[in-house]
Structure formats: structure tokens, C-alpha cells
Length: 402
Image (cartoon, rainbow, N blue to C red; front, side, top):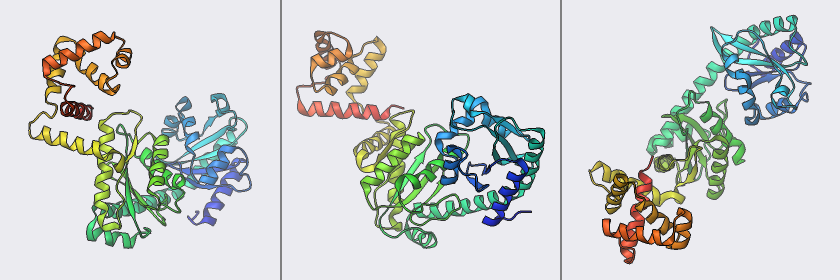
């Protein structure tokens, strides 16, 4: 039996490396590094990067999808062999991979660097090694899940603001001073929470802030957790522009939708920042973007207010588009493009030649369409107030689109 102390994990890794005759790393079901056999760190860059970051770096994760390796691992109870050099990764050495299972549930895996497919003796050693590692990983995962549940409850209390948030902040390693909420949500529902977990953990490295909550639950500065199908991070704000930049970098890597709420002076007002962050995520999701997007509330506040105006109008049975809706119906029924032509003309700064080139029509055709729009829906571009109303309603129309 091996305990969960650093010495116990090291002894476990050394025993497995001795059994297999190869350098090994042991990962849990979330690709977090549990332990590794020391003295062999420089076998290849993938191993070095995993050891240094304590998790499998994102750039190596697509290799798991080669030959459906991730699917095969999830359903296997015997060692697999993967030669990543044949899959377009010449710098990653071949590995024997042994799933670690507890009661038919995959809880992790052993990765051993081997030059060729494992021998019968190595395969037997890997099966034995998995049996040694299974109880250790089971305890680690149970403890991690318990810590995650406690942290999620505390973060939910923070997000609610008020006196409960002040009490929760006192129990958490949350840095004093100004705070902001970052909300993260998948563009489409994921089969697991792994994208959110990895993105939340990625805030730590990208931001350069010391000690956001990590997989073991220890934090010094900010805290994060999953709640209500989204990921939330409560972060100390030293530089608001830097925080927004960090979240954009995170979004570029994760493909999630990310929103940053206003900065508030303390935990009692975090409900306002959370509401902002949720509003940004809802706005960006409504505006589309299959690859996700990121924004700070200050950068999209006007559009967010317009979206809420649209929602209120819809709820009360009013159409906020007015004459724009009439022109939209006309186009739909007759197959014309009057509304799109009007929108393109205004977007081009009322430059008819530029808009016509973009629409691939003659400028006179565009002018005719603008006259028809005026005749059908009374849209008068010569009146500055009417033109502003048209532009506003066109923006409202965009905010109604899925």
C-alpha cells in the first residue's frame, strides 16, 4: 500500500518504473500529473512540459484523438501502445499507456516511454502497476471532488454578494481589495466539464497572478469553481485592462465564451460583477460566433442594455424593430434585399459606390432600393433623427439574431 504523501507517491512511481523498465508519469482522470519517476525528466519535451506544468499541456492533448486513442483508453483494461511519431508528432517518443480503473471506472493512466511496443513482461508489469496505483488515485480523486464541492459552495456564496459573501471570503484564500467576476461558458454544451476546468485552471498561468485556486484547492489571491453550468472565477483586480487582456488570451485558447464583470470594492458587491459577467456571456452567445468570444462589460455595456431592451419589448408583446420589421417582412415575402441594402449603405458611411461594390450591384440599383425602402416603410435617411432611429433599430435587429 502506498500513501498519498509526496514520499509515498514518489515510491509508487519508482516502483512502477522499476517494474516496467521505463520512465513513467501517472495522471488522473483530468490529465493532472499525480507523480512521475524522477531522474528521467529529459526523455522528451512532452514529458518535461507535463512535469513542469503538473498537467498535460494543451498542445499535446490533440494527440489523444489520433486513432481514437482517448476513446480506446476509456474502455480498455489492458495496456495500449501509441507511436506518436507516426501521427505527425516526431518529437514525442512512443508510449505504453495503461488505464487505471476502480470498479470499471477509469480514474487515470500510466504513461511509460518505451522504444517499441511493450513486451509481454512489460504488459504484465503495467497491469500490476495499475493495481498498485488504483487505490491511491481513488483516494486522490475522492479528496479532490470533496474539495471541489466545498469550494464551489463557497464561490456560489461569493457570487451572491451581501453578508454571505463577506463570510465566505473570510474562509477562502481570497486577496483583499478590488475584485471582479469572470464567467466562462461553452459555446455548445460539452459532454463533460473538462473544457471549463482546464480554462479556469489556465487563468492562473496566463494572468501571472500568484496562486489562483488550483486542482488541490489551494489558492492565494483568487478562487474559481463551476456553478450552474458555467465556470466562475473571482479575481483580485490590480489592472483592469490587463485582466481583460488575460481573459481574451484564455478565450483564444479555450474557445469558450468569456465575460468580465465590473470591478467592485469588496465581496459584498460581487453579485453585481457576476450579473455583469453573465450578461456579457449572454450577449456574446446571442451575437453568435461559433468559436466563442470574450469581452469586458465596459466594452459592450451599450449593446447589453439594448439586448435587455429587446427582451423587455418581447416580453411585453411589442416589436422594437418598428418599420425595420415591416421592411424585413416585405423582403421575405417578395425575395428582395431592401433591408440588407439599407444596412450596408449605412455601414459604408452612406457611400453609395462603396456599398454597391460590396453588394455587387450598380450604384443606381442601390439608390433605387433605398427609394423603395422609403416608399414601403417610410425610412427617411434625410432626417438625422430618423436616420439615428433606423441605425438603432438595425442594431436591435442584430441583437435579436441567434
